[in-house]
Structure formats: C-alpha cells, structure tokens
Amino acid sequence: MSAPARRSSNLVRLSISLALLAGAAFVFLNRQQLFDQYTVWRFSPSSEIVAIADKAAFSEQGKFLFYASRPELLERDAFNDVCRSVASENTAILGCFSMSRIYLFDIDNKKLEGVKEVTAAHEMLHAVYQRLSIGEKARVDALLEKQPLGDDEARIGELMAEYEKTEPGERMNELHSIIGSEIRDLTPELEAYYAQYFDDRAALVAQAETYQAVFQQLEAQQDTLVSELNALADGIDSDSARYRRNLQVLEADIRAFNQRANSGTMTRAEYDRERAALELRQQALRSDYSGIQAQIRTYEQKRTELATINSESNALNRSINSAMAPVPETEELDG
Image (tube, rainbow, N blue to C red; front, side):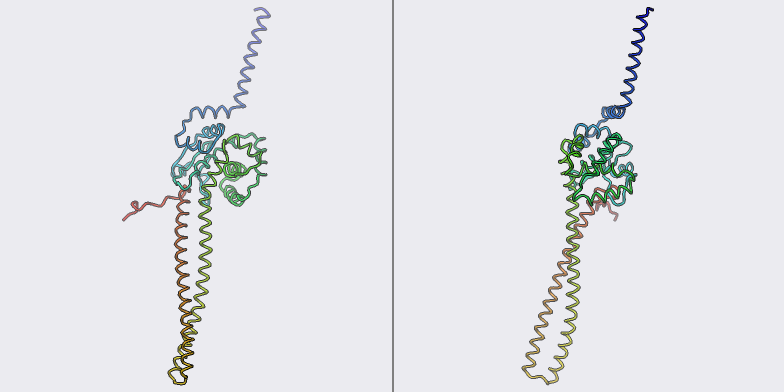
C-alpha cells in the first residue's frame, strides 16, 4: 500500500474513533435526557393522567418530565403501599415521588376540585429538582431562600417542620415544589425559572387557593363558633349563679313577708306596698330565667352547628388522607 493510501486509511480510522468518542461523550453527558425521552416514548398515560396534566397547565417541558416520571393514579391501599415511606401522622399525603416515579392519591371529593392537579405539579417539580445540576441547584436554592412567603409563611413553616420529620434533608427540594405550585407572587427570577415548566402557573396557584379556601373557611367557622360558645357558656354560668342568689334572697324575703302578714302586725298599706315590691322582683327573676333559657337554646343551636361543621371537616380530611379509612355506609353495617 502506498504512503498516501496508508495516511488516508489512518485518517479514516481516526475520524471514526473521534466520532465514536464524541458519540459516547454525548450519550454520557445527556444520559438523563436520553433516558427520559426513551421513557416518554414508551409511556402511555391514562385519560385521567392526561386530563390532570392539561389542567395543571404544564408547559411542554413540564409535561415531558411529568410523563418521564410515569405518573400513576392509585386507590387508597395501593397508594399507601407505594408511599408508605413518606407517611405522616399530622399531614395528609396526596402524592409521592418514589424511585423516580410519581404516584397520586385518587381523591374523590368534588369540593376539593384541583387538589390532584396541584399535587401532580408538586411531584413533577421534584422530578425537575432531581435533574438540576449542582450549580443550578445552588442558584435556585438561593432564589427560594429569598422568596417572601407573605401570609403563607406560618402554613409553610408548619409543612416544612413536618417534612423535616418524615424526609430529613429534603427541605429545599420540598420548598422548591411548594413555592412553585402554591405561591402566587414570586420574584421575577423565580417566575422566569418556573415558566420553563408551566404555561400558566397563576391558574395552577388559583386551583391551590380554591381548595385550600375550603379548609380555611371551615376552620374560620369553627373558630368563630368555639369563641361564641365559650362566651355563651360564661354568660350562662354567670347569669345562672346570679339568678340562684337572687332567687334564694327572694324566697327568704317572701317567707318573712308571709310570717309578718300572718302575724297581723302589718298595716294594709304596708302589706300592699311590700307585696307589690315582691311581685316586681318575681317578674324580674322570671325575665332573667327566660333570658337564661334563651341563651341555653342559642348555645345548643350553635353546638349543633359546630358538630355539623366538625363532621364536614372530618369528612374532607378523610377524603384527602390515605391513612384514614373512609366511614362505612349504612348498608355496610352489621345487624
């Protein structure tokens, strides 16, 4: 073989080697993206999952990562089996991101419209956070720490404390999901960041606010009724004690009056005057008694209202808490 031919052959082999190295480097550097793409190609979402993704206002990238996590909607027992590791005694678990998959609790409560979509967004953002580079994660974490939480600060603080118990070391991961799916007013930098994953994040947050308002309204009603019941109870106790004291004094005065009247030592004018005074006191006590009875009726009415609201609140909490068994229907009872 001539020298030019050998050089040409060597160049071909070198080009092939370089191409193979470049290809291997590309695959290595983009292995997560390639794996996600392969997963999405093979994944066939259910109609319910497609509807959730659409209503959650995911962008194409958000929907891609959602489907790359092979989301599944599960009934109570199946969900508890999969998401047992993140179970909490104090917080209802609506979804989990486990082994790079998203699982959603199939909540069936029309009063909580939007809860599955917000949960799906929360879990999808875990998939996002998992894929961030070390440098990008540090940048996003800094933005999250600077984000004002406003009226949600106490609520989110309680959530983060609970997450610290169930998922220690995952504070920023959880904060990344909560802020992105539940907080309306973000800094421009964070809003731009989350815009990669949502076409209309405001619509998603509105769904979170709507179903959270159901619980907030019930809680406000409960607080108001408890305050009113406590005030009524104090009033009933105070008025009843005063009534009993005045009744004892009146009964003693009536006995004394009768003794004097029977003894014949009273003039007619004294008799009429003292009797009229005692009758006025009797009328006043009867009015006090009627007032106390009215307070008691009001108390019982409000106590019934509170019991109804407590029952509604318990039913809502049961519907979103996979760890709580549903109340059996009447036909399921023995006897």
